[in-house]
Every structure is written in structure tokens, then in C-alpha cells.
Length: 229
Image (cartoon, rainbow, N blue to C red; front, side):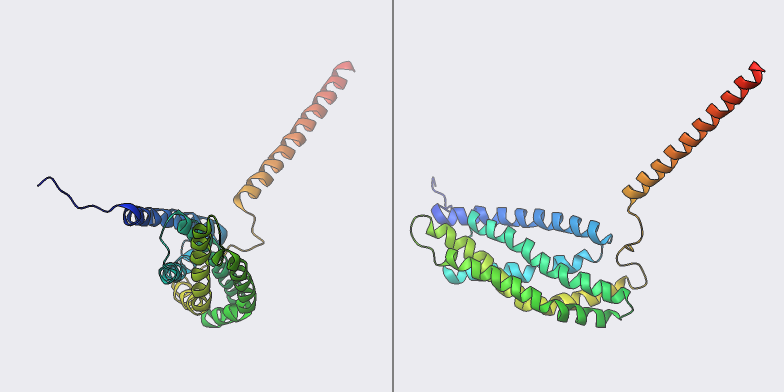
């Protein structure tokens, strides 16, 4: 009686930050999904990118655990940065696969060619990013813990997301592209976007009004000449 048990100090902070991390991760995923849905003009293909991200997030938390670092605000910053970069890698594979499929390749062939063609660019950008994080991971002095957390969070997720992503993303593409096979995966590049079409129609209507106005002026001139005669 009169006593209670509660988290305090670092344990309390980790519990709070863990709950916030889930909310931040959900918001980031929603924004990524909306951007990709607008880019692909499809509500299915963005799922390939979204579902490839958890493996990188797992690698991020695994690295933090191995380094003995806390899941704090610095880890969340690294996590948000990681999601954007891993999403970029997935977009490279998916977009190339869509182009190959539109060129006549089967879904499986398009997925394999997409992973094969984008494998080297993904490795180059990913490992360059990891190399740039090394100074943060080995930082010392004031603020070193925050630097370690950001660097470790992003590095672990990028390493695992890159290694396993090139295997998982083509498989996810085969699954979802098969579901929507027969439909347009991406709007044809020769089709005008809605905004451009509205502008074009507005210009056509404006030119039509100009023609009608000139005809009216011409008719008025002819009528005035007839009256003068």
C-alpha cells in the first residue's frame, strides 16, 4: 500500500520513445505510399516498395541492440532517413521492371532483369552511404552517443536492407504485378496528365472564343458598311 512500480530514467525514456517510433514509422509509410501511388498511378505497385522496408527497419534495431544503444530520438531520425533511402532502391528495381514488362517481357523476366540491371547502382549508392556513416559510428567527444545512435541505426538498416532487398523486391514484384496483370502498370508516357489536358482544353476554348469574337467584329463591320450604302 502506498507504493507503485514504474519505469524510470533510461528505461522509461526507451518505453516512451518506442511508442513514438511506431507512430512516426506509420506516418512516414503513409507519405511514401501516397507519393508512390501518384508516381505509378496505381494503388498496388507501391506495396512492393512498402513491404520491402521492414527488413531494413529490423536491421536498424538489430544494429542498435548489438551496439548497446538506446532507441531514442536520434535512432528515430536515422530510421526516417533510412526509409527514404531504402524506398529509393526499391523504386529503381520496380520502375525498370515495369518498363521491361511494358516492352513485352513476362512478369518473372521483368523482375529478374530489373534486379540484375539495378544491382550495381544500388550497391554503389548503398555502400557509399554506409561509408559516409562510419565517422558517425566511430565519433568521440561531446555528443558522441547521439552520433553513434544515428549512424548505427542507418548503417544497420541499410546493410540488411540492401543485401536482402535485392532478393525480396523482385519476389514482391512478381506477386503484385501478377495480381494486376493485364492492366496498365504505369500510365503511358504519351498520355497527357489531367492538369495538362485541362490547360490544353482551356487554351482551345480561349482560341475558339477569339475566333467567334473576330467573326462578330467582322459581321458588325459588314453591317455598318451596308448601312452606310
